Amino acid sequence: MPTDGRISQLPYKLIDGRIEPLTFSAEQVMRRLKEDNIKFLDLQFTGLFGRFHHTTIDSKMFRIQDFTDGLPKLDGSSIRGFTEIHDSDLIIRPDSATYATVPWIGTPTARLICDILSGGSKREIFPRDPRGIAKKAERYLIDQGFDTSYWGPEVEFFVFDKLEVNTMTPYQGQSYHITSREAPWSTDSVGYALRLKEGYLPSAPGDTLMEYRNECVDVLSNNFGIVCDAHHHEVATAGQCEIDIRFDTLVNAADAVQSYKYIVKNIAKKQNMIATMMPKPIALDNGSGMHVNISLWNKGKNLFYDSADEYAEISQTARYFCGGIIEHARALAGIVAPTTNSYRRLVPGYEAPVYVAWSTGNRSAIIRIPAHYKGTKFAHLKRIEFRAPDPSCNPYLAFSAILASGLDGIKKKKDISDPVNEDIFRMTSERRRQLGITQLPASLREAYEELRSDNVFLKPIFDSEIIDRIIEHEEKEHIELAVRPHPHEFSMYADI
Image 1 (cartoon, helix red, strand yellow):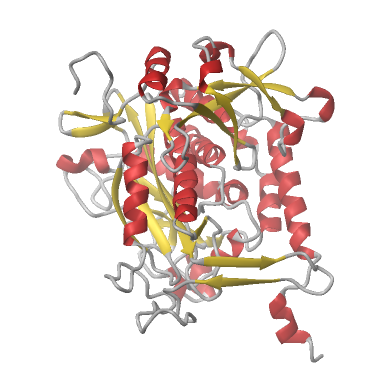
Image 2 (cartoon, one colour; image 1 turned 90 degrees about the vertical axis):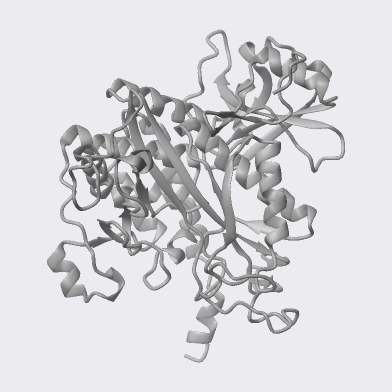
């Protein structure tokens, strides 16, 4: 660490051998703007439906009091799901802890993630600010008697060489074309194409994206303070990737997911490629998920660990938490899998968790208890893995909704039922009925209808207007797709 009074140039530090991100105070950020010769400050925030937005100011115009007063830089009526035109003045308030430099912009630029405040004299957190909802979730967790929760999202995505989408002629037809040097349909693979569903951990030259992921990890770690454990090619062909990022508290983890998406897309663009969080861009191949690892803690103790449990070393608290997720899984789908494309991923046969069940190593269930290690030495690693979410979701809302369902399970002491240690994909429908295994919604419409009928568990964190806006938005997106013929329908029905 520097001894000249300056903060470290690295955005993380070592504590007892552990890597921990640095959090900057307002005063440190003001000093950092000068030391880094920052010319522009990018103020970023997230819309209700997960889109990352920004506005940019000259760094010389930024004052330390802006960290408390905020800046009047937002027309809420122009952000989907926020406000109407007659009540549109909102304030963005930067969070000093989210300071990071943006290396791919030529002019020295830094970013800050912002909370959204209502206009007027009160300047309260805007009720439909996703980050504000996540902060409300953390307060609710404390009200329920827990110190903190840890969240470890595993974000998968695709990187294509080129993506061409024709949506300009809806009356004549629409189309898309994916170009990837790795794909079996590529003419540039030189014999090293990755076959469908055979892309897991191939060495070079089959894996063409190692250098790309290396650069992403450098920026995530050295500029944004997001610590990465490892990165690799995922199961699908055509550039499916995963970069593993360190777990964190709820709001910090959601910030990290938004920054992760921002970084991998922009590094791809810099290398003349395109990264997408679309859950299922390639037919007949695996889609991209965002498995979420969760644990609850109190006074430095992992409340999900119990050495006396012979099956999975999980506590009764963890079982109740899982019981809440399973109870509300179909409604949760409307928040953690919020696009029409999400339900092209959630089909049997592609490793996506379709069935509402739990187990240890069983990846065909929506809840898995990782079983890599056992014993008190590894008590801090005990967690549950919820496998239904995908990277198209808004992480602030997804984590908050998962927490609400789990805490509802704890409050009601919801039984998790018996684990399923068989491959559910291979079971007959009769066998699934015998075991009481249900299935996640098969479409976005089915998901938002489930959310419409089962949302009381969300009410401690989500107000009714937010839930209504989510449902209205998803209903509109469902109709957008439902009224248009699918290209494959022509091959099925044009000769009728």
